[in-house]
Structure formats: structure tokens, C-alpha cells
Length: 354
Image 1 (cartoon, one colour):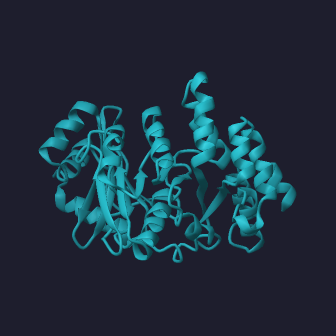
Image 2 (image 1 turned 180 degrees about the horizontal axis):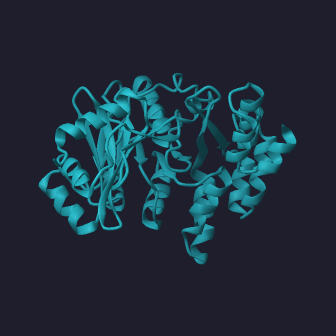
């Protein structure tokens, strides 16, 4: 008997019940949950292509089915009453359908609940500029951004425009108002949404992914013209993020981009989630907050010197390097030494400190 919508709902409930972050459906394997960063099989028979298709198609509209059949890829979000909200990706592997589900909490966490550094509350008070939250997939970027926007929502009267693919956290209007736009459903592309964004009178713009030159250009322009812009990139360090943005542009444009960045970059937060001793995960964030010295280094094409400025410029600024945070986690007994070294961008530097 092929599996159906009811089986799918049960599986999605199991993600929530087990406190998992993800569910994977892949041919010739049991459904797999990711709990605390590790995969665990669900006690069920191995899935066939028909099982996966039966369950996955049950969640789609006709338009989505057509799109998946044309592209062999599909991104969307779904909310199941009394279960939760999920970000979903369907794809093909060796000719058969596969799916990845990521759970999105319906209750948006506060910065305090995330134990976020104090500097986050300070930077979101800025009137304009660019705040980047970066890290690999599954490093909690969306959660950090949602908590930052939630903080604005409960403290300030702003119009917050988000462009996401798909919309993940759904914000309720408190002091602020939200216009949340999903690429594909509400707008054709990030670039199209940003082209018209400035006419929608936003105070704050969130760009779910700065994946190409057009989007990055639009983000820089918006940040320069009096908007506070939040964006994400898949980079692992703060200086690496700055290089990635500059490298998207051709040689002749790079000087202008460096000038724009040096004037508008407020902060870069590069985070990753590490397994904690005793279960659960903890976020390690490298934080760069632009000051006069860092702005000069960006403008003068000396990004390689930013790291040492971050090591020195702590104190009031709230800056921290990933190495410092990992050392602190090991000292406090939060994270095992070998785990910290495994995740470190600069393992040798960390080894010397520990």
C-alpha cells in the first residue's frame, strides 16, 4: 500500500515530538530524523519511490506539482495545524524523488532566550546600514535573524519588509508591521522584489539570501539610502564574508563596492551550531562590528588585516573572534575540546589557546 497524506502528517509530528531539526525521505532508507545534529532512523520500513511520491505529492498544489516536474527541485514552506511549520525541499536523486523538511518554530524566540550577545540589541537600533548573518546551512541564521526582527517588533514602530525563499518564521505585528514576501508566490525573484522594495516605504529590509550580484548590489544601495538591511550568506568567517561580497563584482567595480561596504556595513555575525556536552547544541558566533579602523581596511583593500583588528578591538565594541568563543565554551565545559577543534576555522590558533 502506497503511503499517503496521513503517513506524512505522522512523520512531521514525529519531528516535533523527538525535538528533531530535520526529516529526510530517501529511497531505500527508513525516514531519518536529525536530532542534536545527528541522524537517527525512524522505526519504519525502508521507503520505496512510490512511498515517497505518495506522501510528498499529498502536500502539493497543482502549480507546485507542475513546477517540481519541470525543475526536479522545489522549495516551499508548509504549516500544519497543531503540528508546526516546515521549510521543505523536494529533489531528485538517482531518478527518484527525495525530500528534506526543516522544522521552523511557530513561537519566535527572543534574543534573551537564545542567550544572544548584548551587542545584537545595540546594532538593530541603527537607522541604516547592512547587518549580515552568515554561516553554513543549518547554523541557525534564520533563527538569529527572526529573533532580531522580533526584538525590533516589540520595541519599535517600523515597517519591516522580508523577501525569503520561502518565508520561514511568520511574524505577528506588535509595535511594527511586517510585509513578508515569498519568492515564487509573492514575487518573481529576490532581484525583482528589491527593485520595488524602496517604493514600499520599508524601514527595515530582510533579504533571505544574497546569492548573486544583482541582489548584493540592491542590498548595498538600500543600506546606503537610509534603510537597515539584514542579509544572509553561506560564509564561515566575518572577513571571509566581506571578501565574498567584493569578489562577486568585476575588477573595475570592486573599488566602488569596497567604498559602499566601508560606509554601510554595520556588523557581520558568522555563526555555527556545535553539539554540547550532554546533548543539545550551542551557537558560536564570530562578531565583527564596523568601526573607523575596519572601515578603512575595507576601503583600502586590506581585508586580510581585519582579523587582527577584531582580536584587538574587543571591549566596548562587542567584537569577538570564533577562536575566543570556542575557547570560552571549552573552559566552561559546554563543548568538548575535540569538538571545538573540529569546528574551528583556525584550529591551530585554538589549540595554542587551550
